[in-house]
Length: 326
Image (cartoon, rainbow, N blue to C red):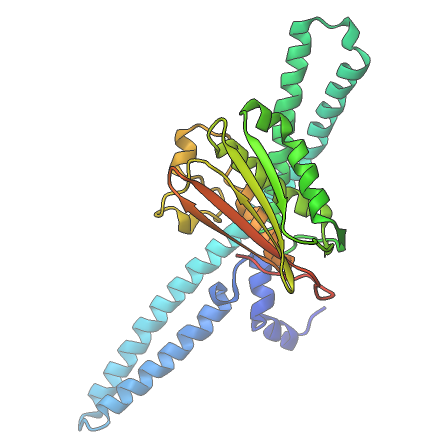
């Protein structure tokens, strides 16, 4: 059991409290409490220096007391509100995580049953029944993708996105992702071209997570590119990193919306207008994954012309991955 002294020390462990509530240090209640204390002290000193030449001690005391009382009341109200909001945010994140975990099992069972019907019993099914099973499989895959995205968002918000370290061949990985999106690109009559500028060395990273990053960017580029357009993927080695850029000929992102593109659940007006499917989580997950892997992600876009999304990954990483939220 913790002693009273240990509990007091924990109260001033700003990093620990911020991590528990899923907020940054400067938004944690204890940090705001300390900040308000400093503001009160500075205000008291200011009043003192302004009033020290006053002949009336009673006036000075009254002003000082009134100022401190007002500041303390305002500060306490703000800190209490922030504390409640932070706790609600933590509860929301935990609920999403638990609900998503609970959904994974039945969705996996549906996927397995649909696969069983297709592989073992397909000969006894008519075309209409096969089409129904195909639709079930497709809808279930979208649900599994959404559940996985929600779990990743919850882990990112808690600063607990796990990343494995393994040797990766980005060229082969990009080729696999392009092939996995072949049905989508063929349906939209879109060409996907990959160019390697120089010898591409292998890197250290999490294969599954990087597959998700690449799939988010490449599938988005295909979906938003006009029919019969082209998506260009360029892989460029530099001194200490590899840069991957995916350029499309799509609807682009308005200048007004560009600052929000990596935020959770954000979808641009053009994307909504064209009725393109999406949750607004893909780029948020992709950027956080890349940043936590020691790289960065950025983009350039012009409305009705197209977008280019790029990310960098270091050739050599430290023993531990970075732990950042953007």
